[in-house]
Length: 60
Image: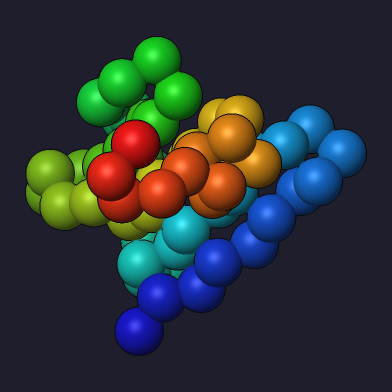
């Protein structure tokens, strides 16, 4: 199960997949960063400019 938290003040969404400690990050796009644990597994996502991404339609 995952948890989503949106910080409207800085327009970032945090998606947490588990409670493992992030040891590194990988930038997927300019606005999306994956947090990775020591075993190389994704711990969560950081989505910058979330209001923009969250308002996009699939066909855009």
